[in-house]
Structure formats: structure tokens, C-alpha cells
Figure 1 (tube, rainbow, N blue to C red):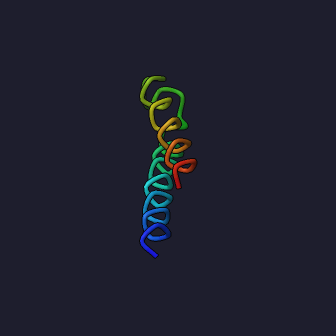
Figure 2 (cartoon, rainbow, N blue to C red):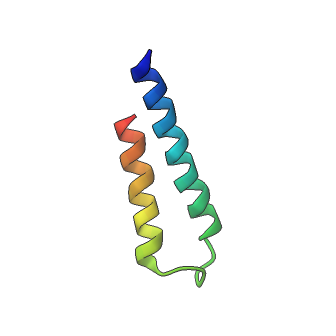
Length: 49
């Protein structure tokens, strides 16, 4: 059961990165590097889960 709980936690964290990306959709809201970092994190966490 622990593996499933860890996967769900990781997916929730990926969801937080996705929500951050939605806030950053305005072209001048953040630098490209910040947007890219959160995009990469969302993908990595989703794959890890």
C-alpha cells in the first residue's frame, strides 16, 4: 500500500506544478526558464508516479 500512497502524493505534487503553469500562461508573467522548470517537474513527477 505504501507504493500507491507515494505515487498518489507524487501525482498531487505534479498537479501543483500544472496549476502553477496555468497561472504562468500570460506571456509576461514569468521568465521562460521558470515556466520550463515547472513543466519539466510536472512531467518527471508524473512519470515517477
